[in-house]
Length: 197
Image (cartoon, rainbow, N blue to C red; front, side):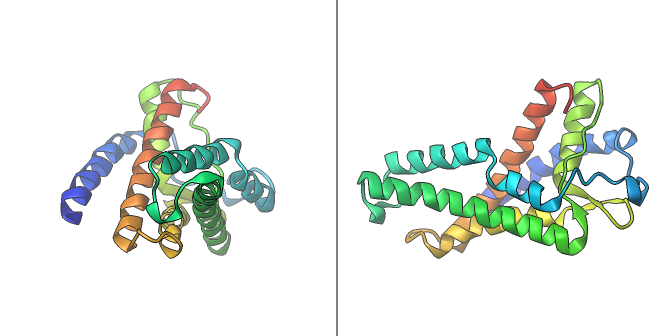
C-alpha cells in the first residue's frame, strides 16, 4: 500500500527537481557569508510564519472541511467539534513551524526565501524547486539541503497522530509527503504568476 503511494510521489519529486539543475546559474551555490539573506530578526520571522494569514485561513478551511466530512467521527458534530478540528489543524502548523525555525536556528540556517529575479518563468519555477529543498548556511554562505524544511513538514504532519483518534504513523507520513508535494506545487504556481518571485 505504502509502496503504491510513495513510488509515484517519489517519481514526481525527482521529475520536478530535474529543471532545478538548470537554475543553478541564476541562484548561486555560494554567496559571501556576511551577505547571506537573513531578512531581519529570527524571532520576527518565526512570529510572521506562525500567524501568516494565508496559513491560518488554510487551517480554518481544512478544519471546516474535516467538520463537513465528520473526520474524525469520534469528535462528533456541533461548534465544539468544529473548534477542535480547526485547533487540530492549527496545532500541526504551530508544531511544524516551531520545529522548522528551531532546527534552522540550531544549524545556523536562513529560513528566508531568496527571490530569483529571473525574467523567465521556467527559471523562476526551477528556482522555486531549489528554494523548497535548500537553505542558506549563514556560516559559510553555501546553499545546503534543508533539514529544517523536511523536519518541520513531517513534524507538523505527524503531530496530529498524538491527538487524532483514527490517525496512525503511516497516515502522518503520507500527510507529510503530500505536504511536500503541495508546497512544491504552490511555489511553482506563485513562480509562474509573480515575476518578482
